[in-house]
Length: 279
Image: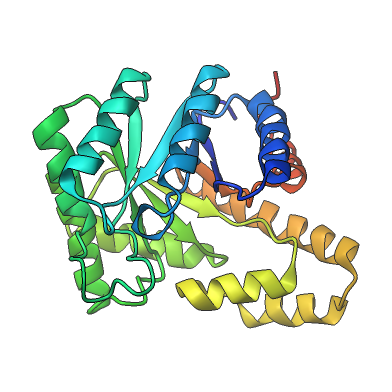
């Protein structure tokens, strides 16, 4: 399975206990020798320093760290300075996003789209970084239309991005149909499926409703039936997501990007099920 891309995503923890847990999670998942660990960036850069510190720690541990970055409420000088620090630390790639403005800033700052951020980085840093972008097989909830959403993905690639990572989904047909439609618009760059492990029913429903990811009715019904039986939820989730990943890889997906929620055990079980080797 080593010929498939593998990466894991973390978010910056808010407590010392969370930081220690994340270190343990990183140590466990690093055994699979992923291409990189990405670290998210809060609305308007609200976790900027935490993101940077975790990125540096992961990089210094010997793994490849990949920070998420958006303009949000930040100035161009602040973003340029942050990128310079990443360049100095040997960071090789950035996940470039539109991001969200922090609450209360709606009319105070201008949202900068991901293709504009890609252009900004290419203008100031040339080919220093590989730039990855986000995409939505089930279409961004704020998109004008299905085709326009794909058009804007094409603009991110035209600006200089090289690969995309998808929002998570549970219907592989949505991904494969999306690839077909992208190809019709001339997009042939790799699109890596984002994978969300299923470990908690209520959290999954809340996340999915917020980001526009569809949880098929049969999955919702089955998970609801388990109630508070977390062991059954995790076992069913592992089965469902393993089959999803197998279908994606068999269908030609270039690899997998796991949204870990800073948890190691389920991602470890998924990687073992899929034949990713441990060092």
